[in-house]
Each structure stands twice: as structure tokens, then as C-alpha cells.
Amino acid sequence: MSENRPLIHLIYTGGTIGSIEMPNRGGLHPIDFAHLNTHIPELSRLDVDIEVVSVAEPKDSSDMRPDDWAAIAAHIAATHDYVDGFVLLHGTDTMAYTASALSFMLQGLKKPVILTGSQLPIGKIRTDGKENVLSAIEVAAAQRNGKPLLQEVAVYFEYKLFRGNRIRKYSTEHFHAYVSPNYPVLAEAGVDIQFNTSALWIPKQDQLSFYPNMDPSVMPLRLFPGISAKMLQSIKPADGVRAVVLETFGFGNAPFDTELLNTLSDWMNKDIFVMQISQCWHGSLAPGKYKTGMAMMEMGVFNGKDLTFESAMVKCMHALGRTKTRLGMAEVMKQNLAGEFSE
Ligand code: ASP
Image (tube, rainbow, N blue to C red; front, side, top):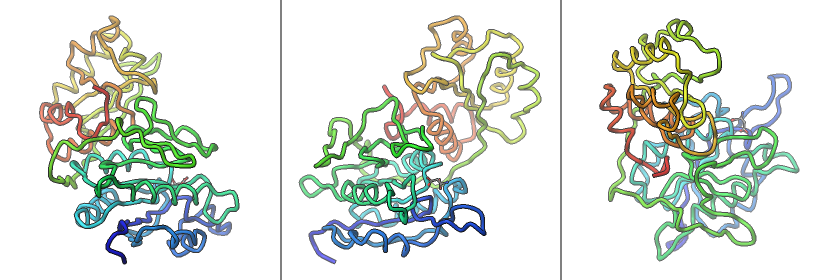
């Protein structure tokens, strides 16, 4: 270890990047980091000190749960003061949820937390994993005046760096698997890595605050033409559900159906937090623009602005981890905790 070289913790959680094909056990299986290391010998040539950390058995990201997010966040919180940056190797399927979760669990981060992965396993000749890992480490190690350049949770993928709680996985096939529809990229990698410094998050707090609790009692509800109050009544969200993420049309519109609106209102009277977001990937809500959206506003449905679906779900889990009442939820949800919505 050298005094001047940044110390990076490389946390391997699983996903395609470190998987190999096991045809007799059904498809791709995540295996240990040693396998990954043999395929990226360049790791030892980087001008950084890397410590490989494992917080749990490597898994497909579809198996990730809030407990896994808490274990990763706990490691980061415990080592935050002496590590210069963190790189998390993660499956692509739920990377947007994990990145959002870490951004809410670790508020006031002073060090970069960079998630990356790949569309093709590292053992494949045409893998995209090698470039992703090497550049993610370079981003995590980037410093200015002896301080980390990034102080937030970000995702590096296919030559672009994104704010973690703004991304959506949009392609199963392309190497550029993610888009950030409502926030500019934080950096682009070409011959050099060019940082978009004016877009980087500036922490609002001096100290890191770690919020380990996530309560997943959140139900998504996507409106569609033909949805009826009867269908909603059969869902009975009162049975354990404390928050609903309502995916409304366009600027925040919903069918002007009194019975349907009454059902939502009934849930809210039972202290269930109801927040609307848009089914559109780009743009923000403006629920007062049309009569069909006005009703939502008048009922007091919470305006989720341009939160992505993933960020909206996870932010509700975070808020429910801190408070159980609808009003308490609204207090947490209206704060821009980690640059998750546009102001
Ligand atoms: N199923 C994999 C995962 O999310 C896909 C990937 O890593 O690309 O873990």
C-alpha cells in the first residue's frame, strides 16, 4: 500500500459480470471474485490500491433485497472515513434500485460510490465488463485538490457516468443498457474522462448519516385505460401496504372516474401514502394542467415530480423506514435527499 495512492474498496455482489455458464444447473451463475480477477490482470497495474470486499454470497441482482442494500451500505458507512472510493460490481437488472437505495441510505457521502456491471460475462472475448470495471475504478479514484471529485452514488456503464438514482435499464441487448432521462450525464469517457462538474451533487450535510432501515411495504399501481374501482378494491392495500406509487398518464392524469378516485381517497384516509409519478420516462408532472390531473392534486396525492419508478419505490421504502404516517412520509419525500428529482 502506498501513502499517496487512492484506496478503493471493490465490492463484488454478483451479476453477469462475474458469472459463468453452467448448462447442467440452468444458465449463468455468479461465482467468486477470483474468477473475475484472472480476466482483468490490468487491475494490478492501476495506480490505486484495491482491496476486494465481499459482503455476502454473490448473487443475481434479481435476488437482491433491502437486507443486501443494508449490508453494502453498512460496509461503506463503517469504512467511509479512510477509504477514498467504492466500486460495486452488480447485476444490471436491479442496479437502478440498489443505486437509488444506497443514495438514500448514505446521505452526506463524501466519497464516490460507483456501481458497474456488464451485459456479457467477463470470461467472454467481447465482454463489456473489462472497460466498465477499469473506468469505474478510475472514476472512483478521481481527485481534485486531494479530495474525491465525486461525493455521490453513481453508475458507470458503457463510457458514461450517471447519477445512480436517475437511471433506468432500458436495453437487455445493447452495451449501453442505461439511460438517465431527466438528468445529464456526470461524465463521459473517451481518450480522457470528462467530468460534467456543474452536474455533480454537492452534499447538504457535513457528516455522513446512515439510514439502514428500509420498509418494503410499497405497492406500485400502473393505471391503464379500462382500470376500474372494482379492481382496486380487490387489491386491498390496507393489508400491510403503507405506500402506493401510482403511475399516472402524461403530466399526471388519471381517468376522471369518481369511484376510482374515491377508492384512492379512501386509502389515503386510512393513512396510506399515495404518490403519483408519470408513465413517461422523460419530463416532470404538472397535474394541474388538465382536468383529469386536477383531481389528483385536489385529493392531496403527493407529486413525485420526475422521480424514476425505481427511485420512487425505493424512496418510499426509505421514508417508511423512518416514519409510518402519511404526513411523516410527505415530510421525507418532499426533500431532495440525493439529487433524485429536478427542482
Ligand atoms: N441477471 C443479471 C443480474 O442482474 C443480469 C446482469 O447482470 O446483466 O444479476
